[in-house]
Image (cartoon, rainbow, N blue to C red; front, side, top):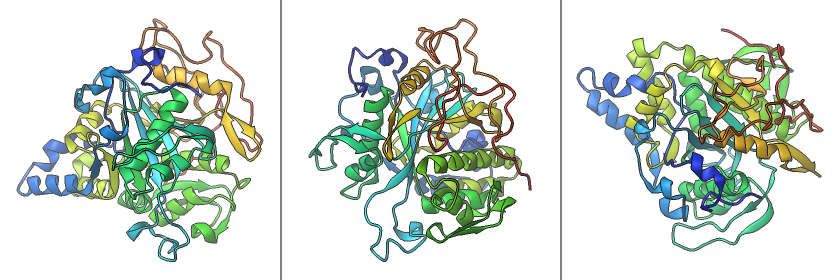
Length: 424
């Protein structure tokens, strides 16, 4: 496992003097501050939406951090610096998120998270690169600080998603996120600037606020566990069906979590296309509805959850299109029914730290990239090292995992769409 980013000798520190962040709501929030204050009642709207976001200051739960990270620079002043956010999907069964009654029945208890993604926002704001970490990855989980100041025991060769449960054993979502961040930093050497946790109800609200999401369903689905029944082919998924599609595992593909990650990435790409295609800035009621829905069940770090911070970052991303959003999964080797990071994962982490384009398997357009990523003209990354990719300018051919969970290789030029892209 890599050393944590707190090691002053870790070369990754040169690329990271950061702190605090945010990604998902990139759809025109750049005009948020102005839009919400145009007309009577604007201040009330602003306060209402800000009040939707549950923000946690987890600074004391993260322990020692790189010296540059201690400088609390607001995100809207981060232009020219890359940003790394940790996005976690929580399947805590409480309140509106108890979609299947498992929480009320006592069948599912405690803090749970089966979806974790690193969202890397490039310094020039031309790319948003999303890396999924399989929940079944065997990792070392460091001792985590609890809200009462006590520490949990460290764990070796533990399932990655148990970090969220360990940190959240007191019911504090911020502590659950902090333990997961510490685990990711220990695994990757990447400094995570801030976090976003989205629960079931929040995901449903986002999709419904967009009027549903066009999605290709490769085969008919009847999955009682996910509460999902769908015909095969193109259709517009409402919030509950989209959530079921993201959760479904045993009834689709080979039934593995790895293949489910691929479907989740396709769904997030479809949501991004739909959001980017909405002309929300000319339809203020629709903008307000979208913001009210997307923030209503968010849990974030202290800074990324601020509306002015969201607005500043989204404004700097206003030139982003679907082709600038890319996805991949942590490269891995099989270890029985679990997985472990492969040697290629080290190259991926180096690429993100150097702020170079990663080798993706899917873009926000719904298609695989048509060419291998290219480095900046001077060949240097954000830290001037020129590191990234394979390290020698070459590309590596894909090596499929047993269930198709490929994440490590360069895309094939002129690749066909990963799945058919559906319209309304």
